Length: 504
Image (cartoon, rainbow, N blue to C red):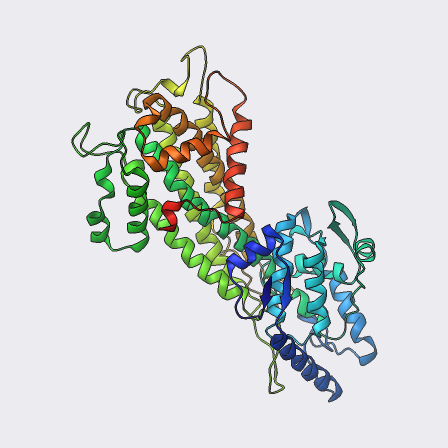
């Protein structure tokens, strides 16, 4: 069980809750802090203080005072009016992450909600009730208002959810699960939607999958090295120590482990003096992506444990308005993640070209075809990889440099962080398919060279991968193979599977 404190949530715990359905509970000490924060809100209301979003309107309407009898209706109106996101719904995995992250943020005790609000979020998670949340419509400042409003409405029994494999009304799902709808009190609607949990949820899952893909790309590239008689000297530790980037040196070390004992990999001067960059510079390129992903992970784990709503309620009774809902830190990290994942695919596609191009493949059959000419083999798989990497280049355009003012220019700079996160996730999916294509081609190529001549590690991985995709004995619908291998790599990411060479 994952116990939330508001301060200690990790991306691996997100993985366990989202993909392995691990149950979640709130730490008692954190719940006591939540209760104190709520008491401060109620005292401020009793004292007649004017507090943004508690007894005022929202955005440009912050100067409109709301009387006590309408405070609860104000919160429900907020959710209904803000639930105007559009487009395809987020995957249930993303929604699970959103529920988890919002509960964790509220547990910090700065949001002024009752413990009952957090209990409802956790009840949804543990029961597997997943609100339908459209993907488009967040500016990434003032929080992910529109997506989180859809999430929050389900807590009160409105909107639609996915439950037990079916789409139904939230009211019906709550009834079936034996959960009562939440009745909102002052501040609680605002506390539920003023935050960065949509962009951070998408970003956390994209980061998880991208990090795993970076590791997978190393053994896939090692197999390509063998297929092309690649030169081992490029991975010599002294080269990478001379540069100084730890991630680059780590990639080179893992490449040496994967290729240890290979009779296919060569030495400098044996067949040629130097390899092409897509082989020789694997540690430099993959290492740079891994370094970027570590920064992204650090940023996300800070944000996952941050108080991101407004106003914030402090232990001394202070109620302070600020801008922690602004998604700029996550937006910039997501734009960096896009580049890091796109480059893994970019260099992979160049290796694919070398595997299928008879002018570059060191004597392999043209396009890895069993009968070149009569059968096209992997020819069009390279086209698909090229298409995907080109699409990634358009998606990698930074979203965080854009801003459009909203709320009558009160909210005049926004992050577009949710757009950045959504595009990052799309790039990761595309990159995985490119690496799946490289793996299919590498498997076929090493067969032509002689599986018995492979390194122990790559030979083991060859046999694992052959359980997913068979040899190319004749042309077939390769789309099915690409999707199957990509799905296999995705499942390994979701369950935290890493090769033993990475664990060392």
